[in-house]
Image 1 (spheres, one colour):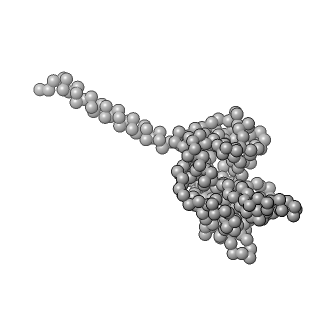
Image 2: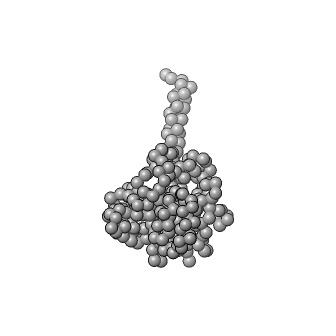
Length: 284
């Protein structure tokens, strides 16, 4: 006959094993959970200037894995995203590859679609070509002034899908502005603007409605892509892809050709991905 002590000694490991198993399940469930945050209502369109003056009342979310701090605001037309890079690695990755913002209704099964925003250095003639394609009327004196500097930074946006196809750079269309962003001088603060509309109607938009929840996916870093022109972009209609008649090439191909080769490095940076369920503020 076994003593009560020996029975207790056998029961203790079983009890601890059960508790450990439950703790492991809870930890796994917590690790896979998508954080939920609320977007603040923007009473007026925000200025994209890489400053935090208009974000003092917004709720903040901190991703422990990447060290990124995020906040959201929206009106009836656009979603605004503030990102603060708290680690040099996260900041370098954003600077190298830009940021991809994908969206779909939270809890739904629709494929995520959105925009990739990045900064590249471009030749003076490439910048002149780009500005005129956006509707700017430039004098010869203004063009001559631009040509005094060999390279100029420019922000570009490409409409993307979760499977990787893309088209762009996106241009202004009647009644809508393309997605855009700005960053602070030291590159640690980023402000993004993305239209809340159907991507089928507004290229680069995310499918979200004020008052509803949207699953926002942020991706940056990883292998730096040197070619954003895919089969789907070559087959996209003029109003979406900016297909250039007579050249047989897309805006994306022509635009990337004008980049300084040093602005398209092939090294790999750390890859980051962050999913957040954002409850959009009612715009009324």
